Structure formats: C-alpha cells, structure tokens
Length: 237
Image (cartoon, rainbow, N blue to C red):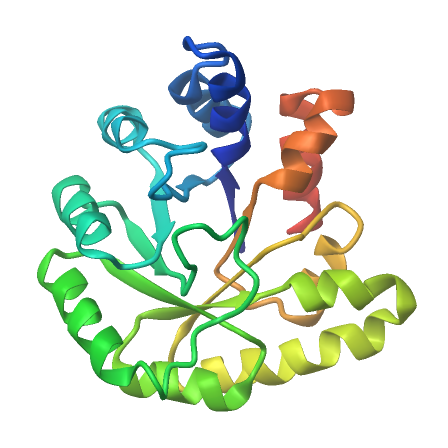
C-alpha cells in the first residue's frame, strides 16, 4: 500500500500571513489524519516562513502516525530532528533561501557528508530518505551511502505529463526499478496532484509513500479537506 503523507507547510504559510494561530497547524494535521492521511510531512526552513521549530515539537507531541521531516541537514536541523525523533527524515539539498525544492542530491559528490548525516540519523533510530532526481546512477549512489529510502523528485514528471505521460513516466520507472533492485524503499514527491498521481501509482505500484502539500491544499479550497484527502487516497488504490 502506498501511503499518503500530507505536507502542511501551506497551512503554516496561511497562518503566518496574519499572525496568531488561525489556522492551527496541529489541528489541521490531526484532521488530515482523521480524514484518512497516513502521515504528516513538514519542511522547516531557516527563515521560518511557514513551519517553525515550535510547530515541529508540537506536532511530535500529538501525532500518532507517520511523521516525516524534510530539510537540508544543517547543524540546527540535525539538532531539531535528533530531539524530535520523527519516523523519517528526508534530506534535501536546498539552499537556505530557496523557494521550494527544485533538484535532487548529487550523492556521489556529497558522499562523505551524507554518510556522516545518515549515520547520525541511524544512531537516533530515525529512518532516512534522500531526495534524488529520476537518475538510476544517483539511486545506486544513494544505496551505497547507506540511506533507507530515496524520494524521487517528481516535478519533471508533473511538468511533462500533459505533453505525453508515457514519456514523462519512463525515467521514473527506470529509477524506481533501480531502487527496488538495490533494496531501497521508495518515496515520491513534488507537484503530484489528482491529475497525475494515479498514473504514477499504476506504473510504479511499489512506491511506499507520496508526500503532497501544495496541490492538495489548493484542491481543498474547492472540495473541502476531507473530500480532497479521500480523492487522493483513491488515486493510490
């Protein structure tokens, strides 16, 4: 079964736009789980423009399901996750001022750095995932460095889906097969939506988890949060 992890960053963005605590990130996260989400994802950034460290600590206190924290493994980030001990940490190569993730790791060039980080996560009992492009060579390097899973960066798939979904999915199938052959767990995320999610799942049925935030929150404005989560879950059947 492919799990749906809802990224609640956009909920925090809306809250921060006016200050205060409306909408309440913890309440929305718990409602997502109540409506059928299998887990919650957050991506705290150094500028705290959406999810803040305080949110991460609060969520850990309330969540009883999968909790995934994404981020660049700075020392502050590693201190945070070592204290919170989420189910999973997804390592992304984002710069501090980056608007959103737009590429995966070059694992070969960052091998020593990532190996040390992964050993630290393992010592804290945290499952690890490395954000990579749909590149079989990078997937193989991810296996060599010792991660538990890879997360395929799916923006290229989403961008080219309307121009030819068969061609768009092809490199992702190849990378996913490589991950399977290497014994790695497989996640996927970025720009996945109700339009393209089912086709991804049909072609790569062994995906462990998808992380979706922006499109899901946008859909919820029209469909309501509960109905939206149910629709995303149907795509993963």
